Image (tube, rainbow, N blue to C red; front, side, top):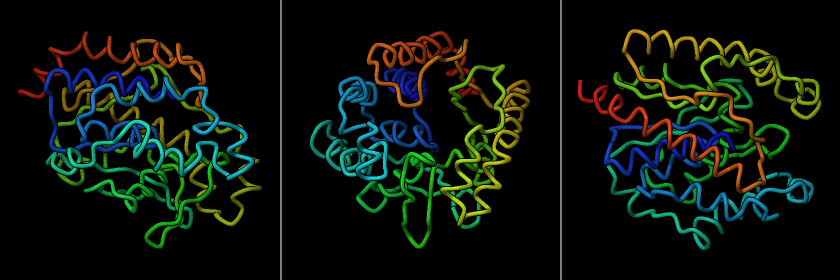
Length: 271
């Protein structure tokens, strides 16, 4: 739910008609970031606030009943098709390419998937990108067994550069001084994911992978080769926050940062 910061940033960009050739999202960055392509300002914060305490959306009862803390059918069918309609037509008409990142359980490597339509099949990739280990079932799609993209590539800047994007804005949900530490639940993952030793190895090294990627971002930002947008102070919010007020506060932090740096964003993109 730190992704509410990202949602706030993206809404300000959309409100100011700032557009991109492509975008890539990981985990919540995928499920909230798709609204950038469908041009639905305010949708991410709206439904998260409305459903924050709805057990159908996120609850331990979901986890016990289905194996998913965020119930799959509700999140990827009922929500976008009935409760807060996702604009599939606008998504498909927008020429901006949108990619998501998922983790391959067999190889322990990240996979990058371009979503052209966000139809039911492609929605499986989005679901996979946001399927947190221990809180989600493995998602099987296109012959792969997938989990959360953040397990293997939380900040996919090098991939985006490798496919030709050379002027990038990176939105982080941790402050500049944050350093990720080894995962305290690795012992539990070794029990539940014992069939996937390469994924476990990736999780063992995840803190180093993340910290190195973050360092790369800020080294390039210092040379004006990319623009990094990030919280000015640590975001104190649960990964599965149920308090609508706290969600709104984090969203507002994202909006404030984006508004404060709006001219800097415009100047960077114009150069």
